Each structure stands twice: as structure tokens, then as C-alpha cells.
Length: 181
Image (tube, rainbow, N blue to C red; front, side):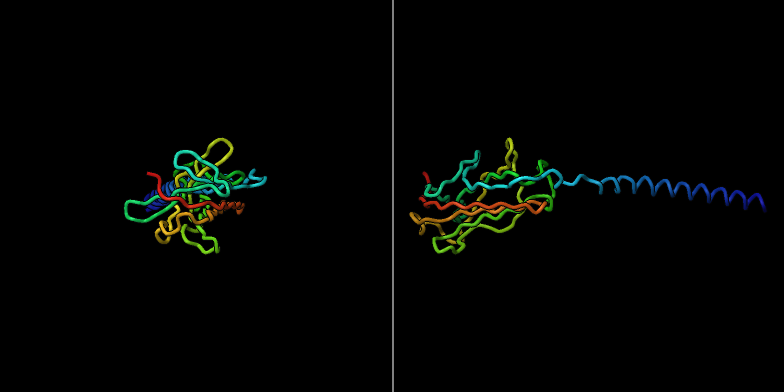
């Protein structure tokens, strides 16, 4: 009887040790994953955003420039917006989660300041080029057909906020042109 009891106690001690080992093996990587470096450390200095256009390359937009609208295959209209940001945190990982990405607003406004297209605070992955991060070929969609506004002066405004709370904004007035053929 004593032998059986001793074997049971020895077996249960082994089971407890195996269970402790299993818990340690599972929780250690999970705890280590939670210790990721703070992305906001070392991000000091002035932040800035420049509004532009371009699909393959950033082209700064200057007040008074002419920008053609594009007619999409489903009948909608848009301009190709772009931005260049400095001094803001933007992950270099193209597969970063949305909560790690900066939020971007790109708005189209008429001469009265009414919003006539664009979007607000959407997470966007920015590409890195040297000391700046860029967003290229962004479709800034008009809420209505842009053809009626050809020749009008409109404003393209961009605002970027990173996960560290830093933000920057820029806007440019441009003349809307008919699509290039």
C-alpha cells in the first residue's frame, strides 16, 4: 500500500513539473512578443507634409498648378493625390497592422471650403524614400462628376497623424483640368 502511494505521489510530481514546463514554454514567447520596442522613441523634431500628385514619383503641387481629373472605369472621377512626410513615424514593414500605420486625410474642397471629395483619417502605409515617407497614386475621389468643375480652383488638403500623436498638414489650391488623353 505504501509503495502504491509513493508511486502515485512521484507520478503526480512529474505531472506537475511537466505542466509547469508546458506553461513556461507557451507563455515565455507570448510575454517576449509584448516587449516590442517603443516606435515613438527617438522621433523628435519638426514634422511636415507636402501635398503633391504622382503615381510612380512624388511631384510637389504648387498653388495655381493645373491638375487633370481622371475618369475611372466605373464612371467615377478622381485626382491622383500624393504626399511626402518628414518627422513622422511610419513603419517600414509593408505588412504592418492598421493600428501601427499613420492615419491620413485627403480632402478636396471647392472655393467656398465645402468638401467635395476625399476621405478622413484612414490608415495608410507610406513608402520610404531617403529621409521622407511618401504616399503615391492615392485616388482622391470626387463625390460628384468632376467634369462640371473643370477650370475651377479647388483645394487639395492632406493631414497625417502618426501613432505617436505627431501630425502635420498641408494644402494647395489648383485649377482642375479635363482628363489627359
